Structures are given as structure tokens and as C-alpha cells.
Amino acid sequence: MINKQNLWFVTLFSLILVLGIYYVSMDDEALATLASDKEASKEVIEVKDSDVLVALRVAEDEEIMKAMQNYQDILLDEAATLEEKNNAYDALQALNTAKGEVEKLEKLIKDTYNYDCFVKINGDSISVVVSAKEHSTEIANKIIRSVQAVYDTQKYITVKFES
Figure (cartoon, rainbow, N blue to C red):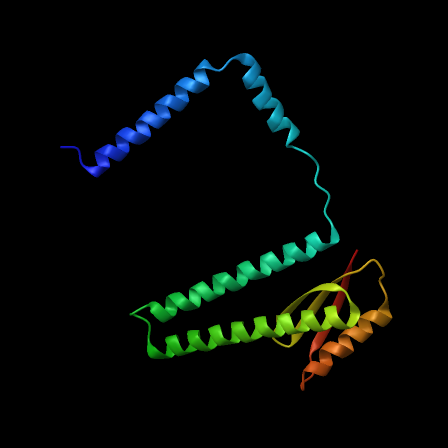
């Protein structure tokens, strides 16, 4: 009797065999068409303003997800002490709070000044990257004042324009 593992092996082997025979039996025109499709897909891609912000957001999200995964691993680890688990839980809460603050600041800048932006909070420092063609110190100062108005304590706020 054939078990499931043998059945899967025979099925996949048959599929590979059929695809191999199909590839070998293709004529030269079909192969040339496939090769020209690969060359056509190697186009130059222009980077837009919003692409820079998206790249920054993706990089930040990856860092946050790695940190969250590390903290969750500590929480689920049976060998971890109670103090380590408490610290990991507090750090997870801090990450979630910071993410909420970032979203709130981005929404504030978008609603007030109508600029797409990226905000990164690292302790007492806040970095704002604004996607705008116009680089104005007046706008930067207004953004800094708006962001500082959200907090009771003094923050170190930087504004960078990407055009």
C-alpha cells in the first residue's frame, strides 16, 4: 500500500518530469521570447518622493517587528525570570505607545500643513522627514512648534525636507 509520503513524492516527481520534458521540447522561438521578456523587465525605476517615505516606514516597521518578536519570545520563554518577562512586557507597551504617538504626529502634520511625512521617535529626540518641494525654515519652525505643543517636556525635534 502507498502511504501519503510516497504519493506526494510520485506526484511532485511526475510534475517535475512533465515540466522538464516541456522545456526540452520548446522550439527556439519560444525560448527567445522568454529571454526578451526578461530583458524588457530590467527597466530603470525612478524614485519618487513618496517612495522615500515608504522606504523609511518599511525599515522602521521591520525594526519594530524584530523588537516585538524578541520581546514576545522572552514572554513565552519558560526559562525567563519574572523580572525579564515584566521588562519585556513594559518594552512591548512602550513600543505600542510610541507607534501610536508616531501616527498621531504624522496625522497632525498631514492635517495642519498638508505634507506627507515620516516621524521617528527615539527617546527624547523626534525626527521628522517631510516630503515637500519647498524647503522653508518657516515651515520647519512651525512643524517643530506643533510637535512640541503635543508634549509637556522638552523634546529635541529635527525636520528634514525630501524633494
